[in-house]
Length: 428
Image 1 (cartoon, rainbow, N blue to C red):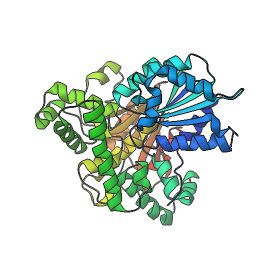
Image 2 (cartoon, rainbow, N blue to C red):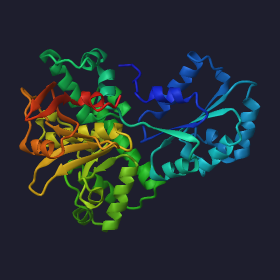
Image 3 (cartoon, rainbow, N blue to C red):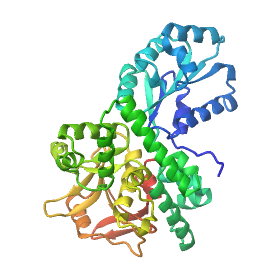
Image 4 (cartoon, one colour):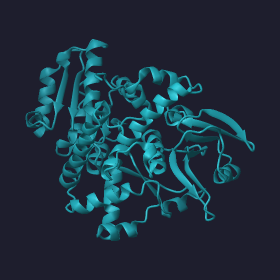
């Protein structure tokens, strides 16, 4: 298609270029961090009139670039020799985790007040995050970049339809057919930028394979030093068949053939590298949420589908309900910020609700997911039970096509699309 993907995170990072604080861009491998640096450089030169000679780019996957960062004194001397009177030096460092003790290294230079603006990127493994973030406390702002959201995907694939959807009016049948096709592709193949821009299905799958293999070999076996890569790979495959299900860690340990503590360690790695997320149950007693069984979801549905080698059309799959539910979970998890938290609800009497979003203020949003087109707005008995018991501030029914709000037994319920979640929850 040849177009540049517009990322919602770009503008907040641009605005932060004016701050002395270090801008840190973290996220999984190959989600577009380097492209963001390209866009920031172009903005500085074309929009702000910054002298290109004041902008320095370093890709620390390259030995030549990394060699400068062996010694702190070398970097300090480099900055001083390039700095022009009255100008800020911009230091863009890609894959900053390649520097030994990266956070301490950069902190020492930052504290010298050399009129240098650091913009750092790093892949989001646990060790990298701790090395960078802890050392730079009070000196940085972190921007998380994830695979594309549903809105970013729609905007790239069909800008005209994105503009129509953004008007929040009822979707006509002509547009609904196209929108459901786009929704299907997004849920089946996910939001990694290289996958999104590729039109061939075979090439999309090939790129997902490369992403998956790179993750296992570079992050897992390499940087994090996981020795039993086969067991780790098997755990991912098992988890991919259980999206939206309660997590039974003892059974997982038995099926993978490792000890329970090893499964717990692997799960922490998968969470820390943004492959999966665990969603706890909703209780008014917060302590219970910490000990009760969570549900598991993948951050990117394309990576999940690769793990089980399934790329059929959404509506021809027996797992379409779980997969669409995962897509909604992913959309929420990519975008909600602390102190907001995501939960599911289930009672001893088996009443269930897919998601409960709780804001730091205590406000609740109830969310039910229906993987189909709806002709009218109706809710389940379980959904009504939650509304009656907790009276949430907002109640959503995420589906393929229907946009409508109705009063149901004294509660306002809004049917909406996956593409509406941002605006419904005030996330943009």
